[in-house]
Length: 263
Image (cartoon, rainbow, N blue to C red; front, top):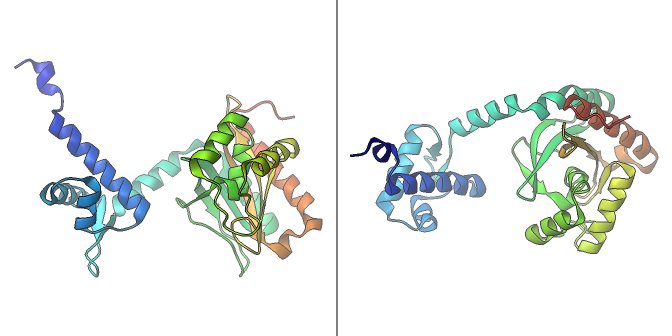
């Protein structure tokens, strides 16, 4: 047999790898699933699904809950995520500035990127206050209802932002959530003009968030940094000061990322 052909993975191997990756994605999206549920979602025989599960379980990529028998992501996923975050140039560049904001205000500082139309939090410094609004590293939020999401989307073209809104939908999470494209377009224009975004009780009632975009070496938006907390700590008379400091922090991170267009 030709060596080049022998070295190529056969169709069965490729399909198995694809099914294994799909299984991991399903568990990441849904939390936990049974063997029957995974078999139905993968549209393959139970025996094939079980072989994939055993392989992934033996390697630590998935685990089985002893109480309900369902499968979930395992410790290896956490190790890979941690390794990825430790190598992230954005996270490394932002951490010092995030700590400054945390020390100055004592509220939650977030660093996020846009992934599949959602804000993915890649670093969070939790609030020092008893009443706090915080997500966890690796969690996601709708872009249109968050300061980080709007800060990033404000740097996209109108066509890109509209396509994002149409693909993901503009679900109302609170009475303040922007649920129409025309309003969101106007809001993104305002964000771009003033340099920061405001989440005014749009994802959690009683909470505000101020966010500013971070740019990379090529001038493309890389992510955004935000400060969030309870309404009384983000009152109208304090927003100008908070916004100024968040923008300064984001600009400092952008410079560390190689962006040179900031005065």
